[in-house]
Amino acid sequence: MENPKPKTRKIPAFVRPMLCKTAAELPTGDEWVYEVKRGGKRIIAVKDGRHVKLFGENGQRLDCPSVEQTLRHAPFEQAVIDGEIISLGAESNRPRRQQSGHDPELQLFAWDLLHLNGHDLTTEPVERRKRRLCTLTMDSDVLFSPSLECQPDQLLEEVLRLSLEGVVAKRKGSVYEPGRCTDSWVTLRVERPRRSKSQAGSQQTVTR
Image (cartoon, rainbow, N blue to C red):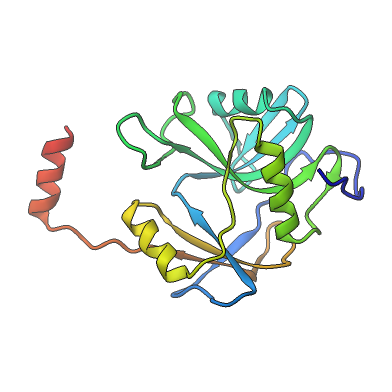
């Protein structure tokens, strides 16, 4: 792994997550990469040795022992990770939104790497942060969420088929701007066809 140039030697207690602009359609072109939103709970994870803390978007502490345990045993000393917690569920490979912090099926999908071993990575381009994150999570149970270079329409069709939440487009070369909402990150939530009452009732009967 590349050795990042130090900007700070102290791991932050919390980093406010960067926000996405909502759009009616995704930007296209070679300057964009795309990432799947699975519909989980967005979190900022801070690991300092064996000490792990999880935070919601507004800085509130979250309790999720299974994810904390995963990070505690991950083979890296210090890191701040932006990601989402989902439950894959025993009955399906489709993710479910976090229901309980004590659900053993809860897993962390890592989107971005903000700090590593005392080094601030927020000013690095998103492609470099993703490469570091991929390497960092390779030998752990933290799941890596890759950037995809593809046609967004095809990706949206696949997201709809898998009942996921949507897609985020990220401009190549973009830095991580804590707490800010800029044109560098654009999100589109997939709208699913509404079911009729008879369809909903039939589905409810089947899943009881």
